[in-house]
Amino acid sequence: MTQNPTSRLPAFDAAQASPEQKAVLDEILSGPRGNLNGPFLGWIHSPELAQHAQRLGAFCRYQTGLSLRLSELAILVTATRWQAQAEWYIHYPIALKAGVPEALAEQIRTGATPQFEEPDDALIYAFTTELYDTKRVSDATYARAIERFGHKTTINLVGLLGYYALVAVTLNVFGMRAEGQTTLPFAE
Image (cartoon, rainbow, N blue to C red; front, side, top):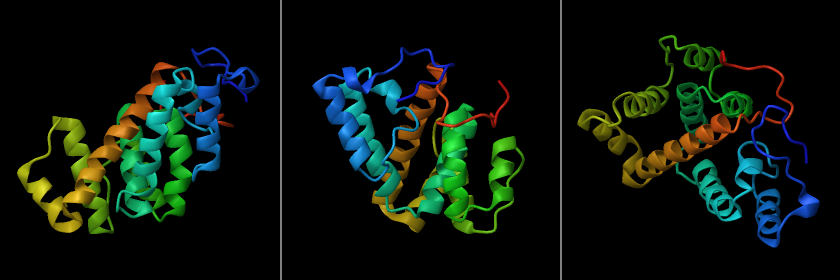
């Protein structure tokens, strides 16, 4: 396993992993992600946190009740708000493949006013940016989310935003980059 040279963390050697670390690695690699790209080689230094976080992440990424397009849109907004280089780098191609228009993604990345073709995209963006800007969600935006997605999926959306904020701060604090990342989507 390679370590990014900009990372503040010590290199991780899977051959020297503790049983707890090996259990986390095995679960991540055999799960829907199938790779360690992202915060996992940071969290692995605290295997208990890594195990809880990766399980929460698997739920937030694949089982929220939101379409992949909407989940990835929320992740891109989160990556932009935190200026999380690796988070954007990893999720940008996934978002495009899931149907997020390239122009919309670029508007979000650069801080331009997004032009939405889909009402659900606009609602996810409004909910997410309102939460990040005001640390709350207005009654009107909340009511729109409940009407469109229901209580359970709206709760799961909040969980997704919290989880990807955790990912972003992990990547940022420890200077982590995505596997193969040679360009930065945000100025440093």
